[in-house]
Length: 71
Image (cartoon, rainbow, N blue to C red; front, side):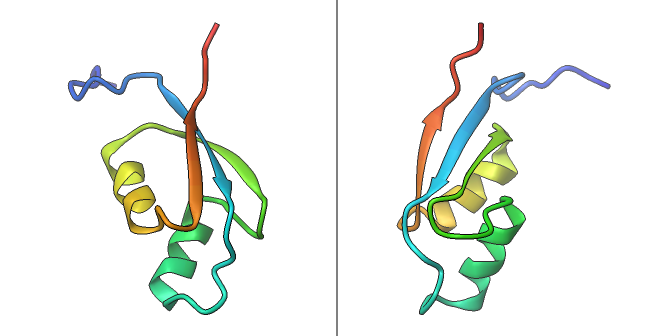
């Protein structure tokens, strides 16, 4: 597998759902599911990639993102 060239190699993000998807468009609810968030206050750790960053931007009003300290 080739090395990443976008500067995000090995970085992880902790994503916490702070607001419910109820009452929001279906695309936002599907994005929460794609990130692995199943319910309010759920926390997942995801890899930092451009596609994940795009998903987080779409639901930025529903989640809280913090970087995971490695090491």
